[in-house]
Length: 237
Image 1: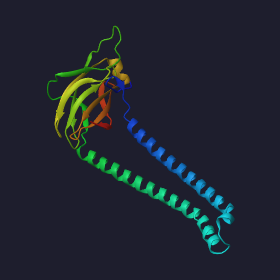
Image 2 (image 1 turned 90 degrees about the vertical axis):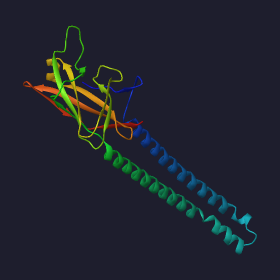
Image 3 (image 1 turned 120 degrees about the vertical axis):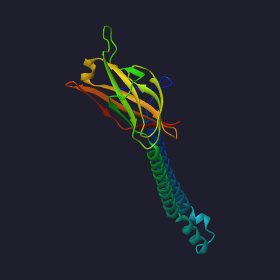
């Protein structure tokens, strides 16, 4: 079962921001390539124009014609300078972009939470959610108690739990410090558990970076297990 993430009632695509950045970079490169072509054509056109009119421009056949002929040959330097300038700009642009993204990744990793969800709870659970397709005549009968433990590098403030049936997720407001745990339960039909059910927990860290972590709960031969996914970055609030 696929979990659909929505924000403010609209579908949310966590990879959209990255695609926008890549599209902007492609547009910049395309613009620079067009600029080089136009500069080259203008330089060549100017050189041809000057050579065609060099006789009428020259006052005599010695000094002035030589000066004008030298001026007409400058187009090579113009094109070379434009190309080298563009490559220098691209080198600086991508270098700055690389180090900026690298620093952002290091900062996020230093405080990034990781919520490990395991079957079983050491105390009574007050919060619960229903998993599995909702259909007429079907009732969730299995109660699965789980432990949500933060084994990451910083605290996590949970926002919602995505079950696949709600628009923006169901409210689950908890602050889970590093090494601490919260407890909740899921209600599911045994037939759905055998096929595997997905859910997700959305949370933010200390720098208001927003993540979603997806899980799959499945039952095999009477044994229930949960597969944990890795935190997926959504945006910074």
